Structure formats: structure tokens, C-alpha cells
Length: 144
Image: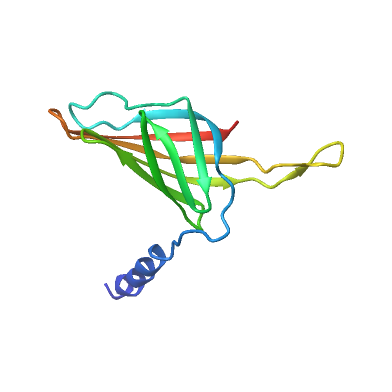
């Protein structure tokens, strides 16, 4: 029991260190998305909106994207994690993820090729209409 008390405060402190980035990587742009099976609650549809492409707009650490016809807005953090929310009355969406940024490479003519960006995360859909349900789906996305 004594060991648990010593370890627990470390995790509480570590979880709260995430801050909006000051020098943010450029993750804005179009991505090709791959979806994995969702985890629906009883009575939910088998899947939510699954866009083939996500087109992120970025201004500093602020991001926006359209999902299911709704604009989601959120923040990019210094850990390269991002969290976005949006929706309307019956359907709300939460898009979370992490950007994995590769290093820039040199092309054959001596120029620099931009670093690749890969996104990994989840899209949660919450419906609060006549039939309320929560659905979370995993995705991966590569910059086009």
C-alpha cells in the first residue's frame, strides 16, 4: 500500500503537464483516413460518420475540421496531441489524436522534402435524440 501512495502523485502531476503548443508543428492539410471497427453502445448504429478525408485548418495551436457536416474546433498541444469538439443539438463529435511527425528528407536534386505527418486517434459520436448513444471509433490518417 505504501508503494501505491508514492507512485500515485507522480501520475497525477504527469497528466496535467500538457499545454497548448507555442511552436506548433504544421499538421494542417488534407489527410487520407483509415477506420477501424467501432465500439457501439447497445442500440447505436454500427458506425458513425467516417469521412474518407479530413482537411485540417491550422492557425498556431488552433485547429478546425469538418466531420459529419459539422465544424469541430480545438487545440494542438506541446505533446502533439490534439482535442477537438463540435456538433449541434442531436449529434456532437469529439475528435482526438496525436500527430507523429517524421523528419524532413533531402530529394535527389538537393531540395528538402517536407516532413510526413501521420495521425492516430479516435472519433466519438454522441447522439442525444430519441435514441441516445455513444460510439467511439479508431482512425489513422496520412497526409496527402
